[in-house]
Length: 101
Image (cartoon, rainbow, N blue to C red; front, side, top):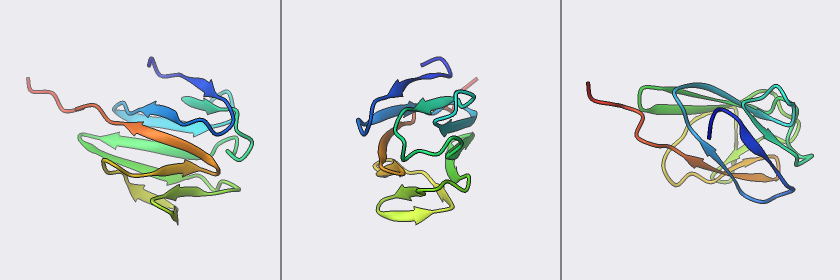
């Protein structure tokens, strides 16, 4: 994935590959990752990765960001977390971001 993800159709699970820095998620075309699902807000959430820690933050979306069944404002992502943007399920793919020099 090169910064942009394909548009998801309805509620199919969409993979989001984490990269260092920030990714924005939403229906708006100016996001890093876009969705077609109408339960996703135009600017729904932001994922920030620093070193090997990844955080997701809801950006005041209408239908919320749900992690492991709980509505969140900000959350540290962990392997195995179940993530929904509104009714849109997403799978977080977190490659090893730390490299040894």
